Structures are given as structure tokens and as C-alpha cells.
Length: 69
Image 1 (tube, rainbow, N blue to C red):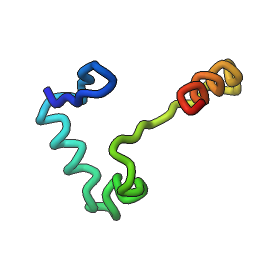
Image 2: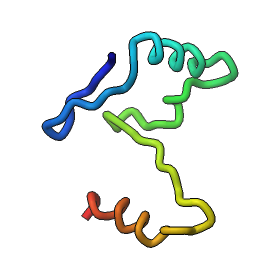
Image 3: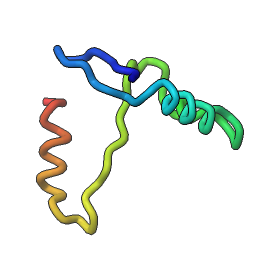
């Protein structure tokens, strides 16, 4: 299991095999690597899933903006 320590917790990322499969699948075979769109100044990044059809959009917006305040 690949993990990363952050915020006094350890977060799982998957097994070594899963990470290797994703890396191989996104490493330039069909174009740039998936990380090509992420500026190198960022140590970590996340994928944000938006609510369907605007349901709960206000709650989602508040949750996303709260850490930035």
C-alpha cells in the first residue's frame, strides 16, 4: 500500500501495483503524462467531483472554499 502522511494522518493511495498501473497508463503513451497539467510548485493535488445537476452546489462550494479561508 502506498501512503502519504499529511495533516497528522496517513492517507492510502493504493497498492504498489495499482500505482504502477496508473502511472503506466498515464505516462505519455497517448500524449503528455497526467501530471503535465499540474504546475510543479504543487506538492499534491486532488480531483474534485461536482454535484450532479447542481444539487447541493451551495454546500459543495462552501466545503471547497472553507480551507482556503
